Structures are given as C-alpha cells and as structure tokens.
Image (tube, rainbow, N blue to C red):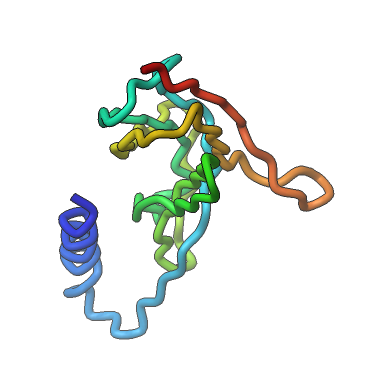
Length: 138
C-alpha cells in the first residue's frame, strides 16, 4: 500500500509540475501538526485497524506525502509529512476543513500500544505530542 502511495505521489507531482516550463522547481518536506486522531478505544491481538489523523493544509504549495512513523517497544510516534513546492506565490489556506489521512496498524502481542501524534512545537521549540494509550484485549 505504501508503494502505491509513493508512486501516486510521484505522478501527482510530475503532473502538476513536470510540464511547467520551469526547470528550477524545487521542493522540500515539512511536518504538519496533527489536529485530531480517530482510533479505537481497544485493540484485539492480530487484527488490523485503520487509524485516521486530521490536519490543516497550510498553503496551496503543500501536499500530503506520507507519514513519519517510528517505533520503540510498544510506543509508536506518528507525524504527517507534506511535500512543499518552493515557490514565491504560495497562498495560505484558511483553516476551515481538516484533511483526513489514514494508515493501517497491525496489532501484535503487546499488552497496550502508546501512540504519540506530533502536534507541532511549543514556544520553546520543544516537540508536542498527543499521547494515547490503547489496551490490547485477548
């Protein structure tokens, strides 16, 4: 599934910017704060669950590119990654409609999972997370 998203993102980017006549188009990747999360209150072992996160798209130069996902023991850290086309005429988008993106999570044999969803940085530059623990029932 991830390979399909990567291929689709490539073709989307090529289609949007590949024929623009501007050979100097550059882009970069940026984490976008997660505003809301939808996940079950409990998991069953060996089942797959769809986890949905919602975020605001900052500008018309931002497009979803995937998730930054890391794991350590029973802890999972998740962030939304946007690709940003580096151009001067980007327009900010009003924060009216949340964008939903999902990923599938296969539950193993842990007693619970702790999810840390990245919500940006505070005024001191420290990462902020929405932390949710989901128990696994047998």
